Image (tube, rainbow, N blue to C red; front, side, top):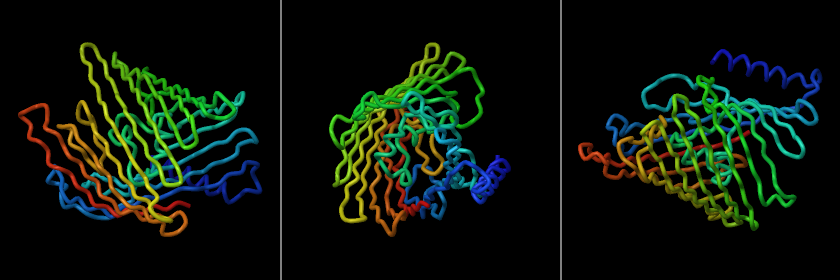
Length: 340
């Protein structure tokens, strides 16, 4: 994978440096998010007290015009290992690779693309560099899939939008089973600044495993900032086994002054603990939790933001009385975000 990524990057560089010899036009862009992190307290004693610097995420994106009506995107993502143990260099992989074109006034994307699960939510949240949105953070749905998506608006005023997608259900990895996924999303903008979304998907996981996600989201934005609230539920069925992972999440981003945002977010797992955990902010899988983010975002210069922030995880009593309640997790971070 690393060799493949290096070759593709070299091809893109050559392509960009020889515009006079190709008909297509395109451009590079990207962003980087890095932290100085300090784990003040953690339920895992092996992680408590760890501190250091890392690049949590780097994007390098090429957007090209294949023809007048067909566009393409190729995006690489690079991450530090983030597991507080590995000493590997940043790993690069293909994040996006797709063609985009118009068909009867609707947009059609084919390839490795972002499903409609939290694309609009992530844009409104606006601080992906600070933290992922809940379904992504708690590994309940992937941010990418290989498939085909059709999206558009039902009216000229663009008050009602939709996205339908069919995909492998294997994220940006190779397909390994016969199961597939269907996604559907409806967005409503009844008044200026308001956005309401209804979302659902179905996944055939193979071997009789079925997964369903349904979600509702509402937000309001203005010159003062924005607020958002969502409810999400992932349901699992397999033979006689049935499970639900439900959560609520709310955030507020307030423009306190020119170039200064105040950021607050609260997530709550309702029914059961997270099934998996991300490396750089590992949650306990023994108990449900509340997760709080508080931060300030300073615009140091155009396209550069410095974001001091604190992340706090508070655990509930486990359902299994034989398991000890995990201690709180507290992270203090100084995040630097810049794009080009």
